[in-house]
Amino acid sequence: MNYEIREMLPQDETKVLEIFKQGIDGGIATFDTELPSSETWNASFFNDCRWVLENENSEVIGWCALKPVSKRDCFKGVAEVSIYFDNNYVGRGLGSILLKKLILDSENHGFWTLQSNIFPENEASIKFHQKNGFRIVGKRDKIGQLHGEWKDLIMLERRSPNIF
Image (cartoon, rainbow, N blue to C red; front, side):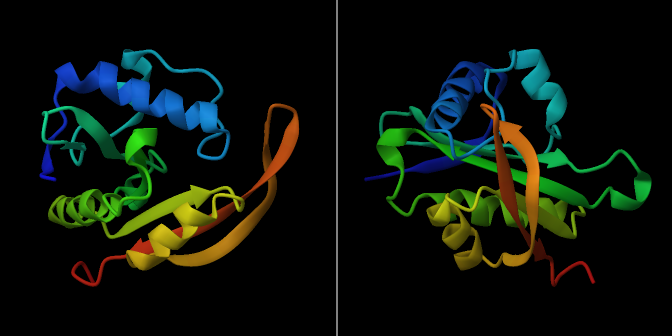
């Protein structure tokens, strides 16, 4: 099969949010319980470093983007990774294509640290990030609640060797 990576465009919003909704419904990808509006979603991510992966029918099947971790200037080069795939395309090794593109693009935009916070039960996502150069830096115990249950997060990061 042929897949194409391209920059995320405004007309991709509906499909991007549909894929994010699948992540919400899965219960192990995000603390979000309701789909945000497209305005809220857009405001929470950097305008740069947004990519989609299309299948041979030019349908968006996955996306990735970066969120700021802080508004403080000293953390301008640190971002949180969001990467989601349509459930029909999970487990096919396509995530590495998107994440590698995101890593290269993030470095071109001056990001020196990418981080990801993952529920411990999402073992596939933890292994995926480790396979792509992220390392576990810690565990945050009972950091938030999801549907009334306290949840832990595993924090992973990737430091750019090209920035230092």
